[in-house]
Image 1 (cartoon, rainbow, N blue to C red):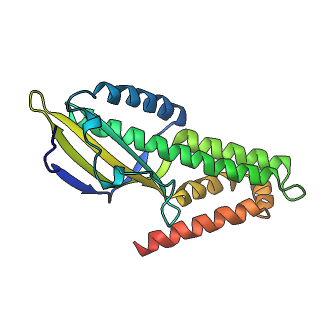
Image 2: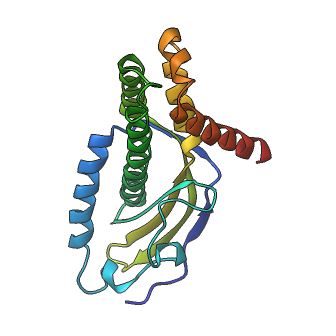
Length: 209
């Protein structure tokens, strides 16, 4: 099945604040895989590889350290197709963010003589609280919408999303700052230095937009 030109191309410019529990994202991504496979067959998604940003392996981050995620969805309702595509893209970003946070936590755990149990516990609590509530700074970088068939029309949506980890790092540090004693000791760790650099780069990018 040949596809027409995209109905529209959206350059992601809107900031999206998404309430996204990570466990829900994992389940939603599994549902998406099942749903997309059912859209296969003659003229299915497997017959069309999508736009350029869907080709090949997607790096975890771009050259500026921005986390990337992509996804696709198909439905007779455009809103549902977009929702499925976004859910898959956000799940990829959430997985990448988990790896980044795990690295911060491991680094903090390994800093014997610098970090202490109260600091580690406070850091873990702050990260869990932030990521159980929201993924801040999500933005749609690119997306394309195609039509398949005509009775009924099936919309096929491809989405590339991004997340600046500096936004999440700033939220974690802000949460931890509420515990003044633990925060003061946290500022003496290498993990704080790493996160502070990520936050400063994030703030610089925001100023330059």
